[in-house]
View 1 (cartoon, one colour):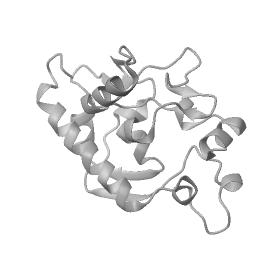
View 2: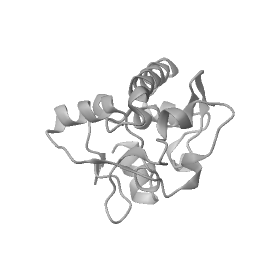
View 3: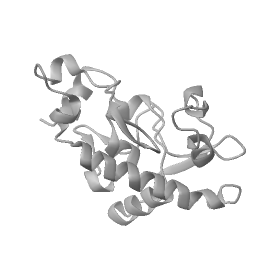
Length: 167
């Protein structure tokens, strides 16, 4: 069983407790793969942490939050679940998932991947001694860094249209 499915059987997951930021590139990849549309929305986050300035990533708000306080995010079900959460975890293939989902559980800023912070993962039951969530998920720092770089490239590409309808 995939570690995310094990997690979902034990507690609320990252796919249930977060508001997933998406880029225009994420939307294009998901649409091409799934044939779906209307799975994203622009709205104000309900969690104020998503609109707090971060001194370790000073451009994050400018890149992710429009002047009206809204962000482009995946829609959620009435339960709070991500629209792509299935009984075995995310129904999207890894290479199609939103970049922020692919990077997790790594913490990051525009300057690079910083650490592993599996806030939503039941590490005590999923990780063997000396193992990290990245190990359990089969992730490596090089891949996380590539996704982080892609994320910021897409955020910067989206930024010029911030005040317009494209973002």
